[in-house]
Amino acid sequence: MTSRSEWHDLPRPVRAAVEERTGPIATARAVPGGLNCAMAAALTAADGTATFVKGTPLTNTAARTGQRWEAAVNPYTRDLGPRLLWRVVTAGWDLLGFEYVGGARHADLSAKSADLDLVAEALRTAYHLPPPPPHLRVPSFAGRWAGFLETGELPLLHGRTLLHTDTHPHNLLVTADRAHLVDWAMPALGPAWVDVANTAVRLMEADCPPETALTWAADAGFTACWKTAGAPALRAFVAANCRAWTSRVGPVDARPSNDRFAALLGLLP
Image (tube, rainbow, N blue to C red):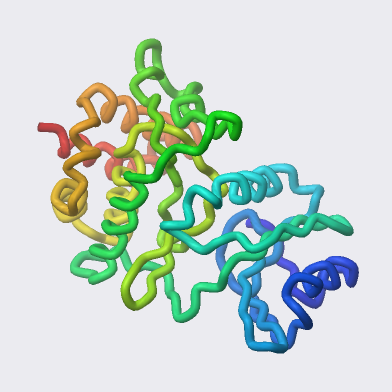
């Protein structure tokens, strides 16, 4: 995890550039979580307006790539998450300022959680998002897995749906009536069912029994996207994830994660 800086740790020119957009900052509350951002805070201006700000030093190439993608796809994801208000790149830092989602908490993906219906509604909205224009060159989901797919499997994971690809509970902010899908640092174009499949695995990680997670994925209004998921494509998706985890941590340590992905095959007719 990237080491964190507080608002007041930022160079004075960075804070001044932010305050040109927000007005003088009265309070700054650090926001924990997130793997790549080196600074995340809820800033409240003197007039009471709140902004969520996240950022990274310019020296962190991977994190800057994520920031660039968040900014690029934000105009196309506003039905799902907060609007990007500004971007500041100065004095060695790259910061993004978003509308603040007040009263939000991270989603509870455990069995019988009321949040599951709100998360399902967010993913149904995502299913209908129009893809960004070609000039943005959003990465291919299939291409991400090229090193773990065998001949003939790669084309099965091509698609034109804009995917989030990281529906971790920390990226699902729940308010009274909806779930907001945030942190679009890893977007991809791929099959419409991928984010649903990944979220079903997250349900299992939250101790949902596999049958509960599969029932949620099958019955929560995702019929349209599952109709586009042929058996060979779902098997390729599961195989790629299992091979990746095995390569990363070895077959023994990968077994719990691989078992969760393998459970997705229960969605096949």
